[in-house]
Amino acid sequence: MEKTLLKRLLKNLKLNESTISMILGALVIVVVGALIFNYFRGVKPPKEEELKPEEIRLVEEAGELVPEGLPVEYQVKKGDDLWKIAENFYGSGYNWVDIAQANNLSNPNIIYVDQMLTIPRTAVIKPLAAEMTAFGPVIDGSEYVVEKGDHLWGIAVRAYGDGYQWTRLAQANKITSPDIINPGDVLTIPR
Image 1 (spheres, rainbow, N blue to C red):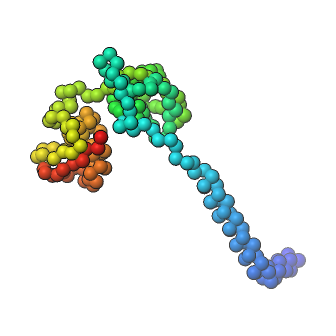
Image 2: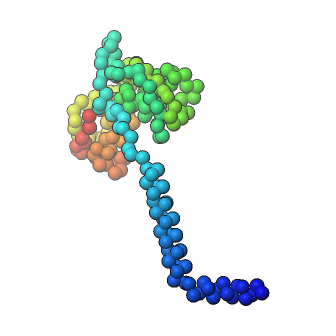
């Protein structure tokens, strides 16, 4: 009895093979369409740009430079760390210490997405003048001619007071191998 039922079912399927193919094709299209819809529904528009160091307006207070508009509350975004946040608000990552202290962070290496941080009104911390000139005289211009013994870190310290800005120099000058710069090369110093 089971064999005849199975034979009948297979015979019906064989007769309606084109119909079954059409139904399965439509099902695939619906599933793919649903996946594409869910993907684009989850894509969010780009968020408002954060402050760039060149957009930060500094005012002098008690002989020190302080960013305008502080204190403010800031909501931590994915990929943030205190150094990046300090660079966005002060133009100097060294102010991460002030943010950690103002928010009583017991471990400044741990911050969470959507955590609210107070960005305090405090003076911008730059490396000491002796550190800024440890690699040579300060670079004030928008171009620099590489000299023998120069490297991007040292040029960044001289130009920005922050060696970590070497990546900015490398990007602006389309340097693919940052260990190789040659005397006589003219570098653009973005300000």
